[in-house]
Amino acid sequence: MNVTLRQLRAFLAVTRTGSFTLAAESLYITQSALSGLIKELEQVLGVRLFDRSTRRIQLSEVGRGIHPLIEKILVDLDGALDEVANIKALKRGVVRIAAPQLMACTLLPDVIAAFARDCPDITIRLIDCAVESVTSRVFSGEVDLGVGPERDPNSDIDAALLFELPFHAVFHRDHPLANAASVRWAELASYPLITLQGQFTERLSTDLHNAMRELDLNPNATVTFMSTALSMVSVGLGATICIPYAASLVRLYGLRMRPLVAPEVFRRFYIFTRNGRSLSPAAAAFRDHLSRYVAEHAIFSAADT
Image 1 (cartoon, rainbow, N blue to C red):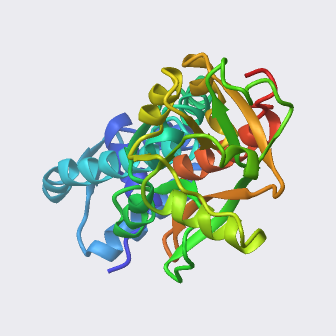
Image 2 (cartoon, one colour; image 1 turned 180 degrees about the vertical axis):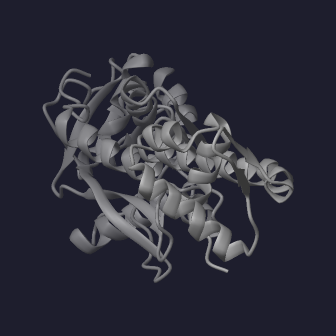
């Protein structure tokens, strides 16, 4: 049985207007074309749907029986098509993002606020988590995309470069190195140092050792969150290391941020998505917005801190 949407819409139009002429006008087709659609539908179903006379047209007994069913089918279909159109037009949708805690409290709120101004009907759900769990949340499908520093290659995860930035040192304003234009790693090593636990410091130590074999990080303290490290720096317990995208948080603590050189060590940050899983229009729009925001805003300069 090959029933078409055009036939069903023609059936409802005639039922609604009680006239082939008016029904044809409402569908913007000729009366002969409308009559042909009704005839085709009756032939496919093998029943008469309308009783015709010279004075009026009315539903047959079978037509009255199937009319509510056909009407519901088309209402549901039109609702589904409207929903797809709204999603495509970014009038509706939810985007789930996983990001490390530091990025979630510095860069991403500004990005999300700017996106909300352009797409107010899209809901953004930000999950702040440990750096190590960003890609696992992407892989599990818990989030649509993740943002974070480079990870070991994974064939199931696609990584698109978002930005690359050098490490900076963060000092109390009274620290001897706070007013320097830049700070050498060897100079920083002469003072108490507070670093983050886990892969952040492990990767940095490896990079430094590869560049200068005689230079190793020997922190006086290691903590889980950058906010803890900055709090310790703010009371004079040492210096710490971070990436310039955290400049807004550094300013909040009233600290100074200075570029680290000799060597200059960079860290890359990526947008992570699951291979073989297409993004929703809303998620794709946010991904593109994030990339544009980073490219267009001078948000990573630490010169004024």
